Amino acid sequence: MRADARRNYERLLTEASAAFGEKGTEASLEDIAKAAGVGVGTLYRHFPTRQDLILAVLRDRFEAMAATARDLTPDDPGRALREWLLAQLHHITATRGLTAELAVAVNNPESPLHGQCEALFSVSADLLAKAKETGAVRPDLTQPDLATIVHGIAWSCESDPVRQERLLDLFLEGVLV
Amino acid sequence: MRADARRNYERLLTEASAAFGEKGTEASLEDIAKAAGVGVGTLYRHFPTRQDLILAVLRDRFEAMAATARDLTPDDPGRALREWLLAQLHHITATRGLTAELAVAVNNPESPLHGQCEALFSVSADLLAKAKETGAVRPDLTQPDLATIVHGIAWSCESDPVRQERLLDLFLEGVLV
DNA sequence: GCGTAAACGGAGGCGGCCTCCATATATTTA
DNA sequence: TAAATATATGGAGGCCGCCTCCGTTTACGC
Image (tube, rainbow over all chains, first blue to last red; front, side, top):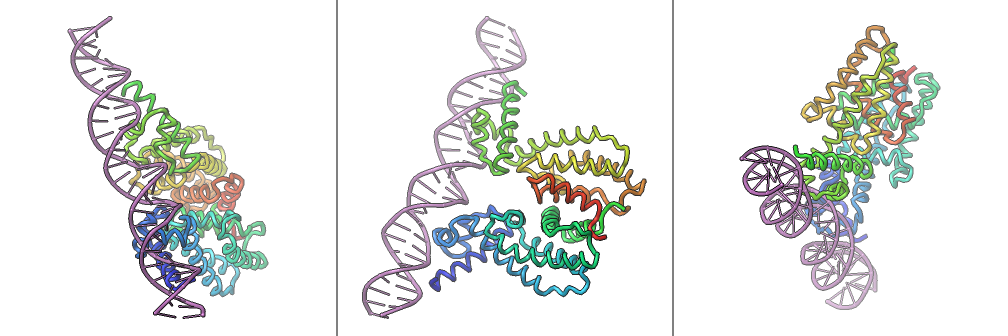
């Protein structure tokens, strides 16, 4: 890849991320190209469809999330699991405007991002297994349960981290007494 | 309102509902007008913005939901609450393509639909209060908690009612043992 | 430096959004 | 019933964003 191509690619990605965050998935691609200082032609060569651009942005976010996962120190399995779910909530919220796309990637094995999801899934699965061993969580709980509920919570109060945390805790502690 | 106007209004609403269900909120308004056998001008006079059309469709759905609420027979408060939440899940799922709009209406007091939400909220609040009296649910649970989590669950596995029910039950029963 | 493969960018065709107003139709009145 | 009036109609047209195409420009190997 030529140096100028790489440079433009990066700039487009940066501007796209900003634009999606501000205006959602429907942000004008012409505006993104303009903001990156290139013509639309260049944008479309790098990212043939809007979806491709969105996926490229998400790919970056996944890396950040994987980094968080690596930093986890699972002393108490139950607590570690909660920490991890909370970290996911923060990351999803930071992905403003793309939450829905993220959920598709998570739930749909066809998605080109599903591979990246797998890495995160295995973190959840590990923590979940450990938590089950110590009897911290009910034995029939599955990793997909966790992935889905986290995305549901993140989406349903996208701009209110406090409520997100509360709902997560309600979920973890249960509602019926 | 003139008879022909009313007729066209109804037809537009029907076609819009179908189109949104099939193609989501971004369905072409020109196509909807065509399907209803009227010109775009007519569509825009009745519904000046896309939002207005969406809201009108949702208004109908709210009525259906309110009807369900009236049919509830709260014998056992805990069970009745679960039934009601489940019914909400079904209704939200039936509102294919408009789930996000619905969530906005629920969470945002500015929304023109918020008034209609109130009626449903009070059903939840009543059932919740009764359930608290009998000690079936934890005392700090609030009606907004319920509204938000139900929408989160409905959205996060939009096309899989079985998983929705499972997640609802996980939420209700709690996850940590 | 020079040649070439690679990258650039914007003009242009297409389609959807929304407005506007000349025309058509329902309803009222005599 | 027929004219008068109020109301509704619908599609042409301006605008904007999507995406393609291709003539021009630029980086990089020799």
